[in-house]
Length: 456
Image 1: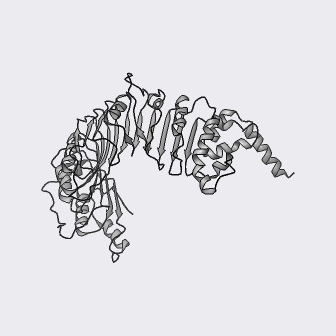
Image 2: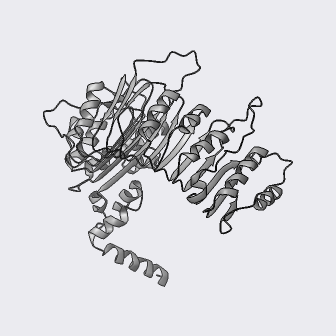
Image 3: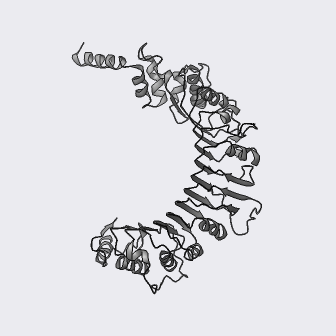
């Protein structure tokens, strides 16, 4: 036997001699299929994977997982075997799993999962093992399925994600806190049994801090009510676009937000449903992308004490913003729908006296020929330019005349600037040489002689 082979065997023996806790830690670093495959290495390794505190199953895993578990020799063919791959592997491995505590269970199943698979059993087993994190995505061809009621009364559960073909049916209970440890909840394109079910769900989470919701068009809810006193971060996505202005808006649908402890708010809503928003005195950061002025007005009014604001807006929304004073705002990012936003933006800057960072993102700005793109300089310089603005970034800079004029104005009046970053629009006029544009940008005078200009 060669010396190299002997050294390899000795190395394997040294690894096998490590404590079980360390071997488990090593297996946590590899995909579950590979972790289970180590059972054939030796008697020492046969049961190590069964003690893993975290199991991650994804339908994109190799079809050979099914073969590893000795699939039926009478299978009709590879297609049938492939359709069984992940759920077969999942079912078998969970039955063999022996760890007293299963902290994390991640399951993602697609259309190949048979509709008769008992997915609830897998979740129930995790609950029985004191699970802390459950992420369950189901995209099979069958209808939405309910999950075991024990999931909604799991005292150890801290993070829960439910996606796609899941029917949320929170059980009726006399206990005011069925999920006493749940801190993070994500609901993505699921279906709800009814509004009372969803209300019970949220009211049974006394320490819930993060809620992420992505809605589908038919989720059985007319009113979506978020009333959580402990919530500090809310992400809400409802991108069920109306086809055109003739579409009927469901005036009976409403989103109600009552979250007085909210610090971070990210909302993308093109449904044109009505909104009811309570005061958010603690709000520090908001990302707002809506297509309805009245909705925008409600959000922005409740956010006037904010520190960081990202806006994707129509022109009239920026005009509305320019009439409000944001006395605490430090960071502002604007994504205009049209390029002619300079004048209302300058008015807004006049109402943000402490602004330190400004980002203008023109990626989605249209350039209609019938809209004049000229602008007039304000009679007075916004205070934030004179005394606070340190970072300025322009994304998708198009080097049009009015853009250059606005940039020149910012650089000529921002005395505290430290960094200026300009990202050129990749669809610039091909007749313009990039080096020529960069040269012109570098020639623009800057009142802050210590500022750094970066062009990419």
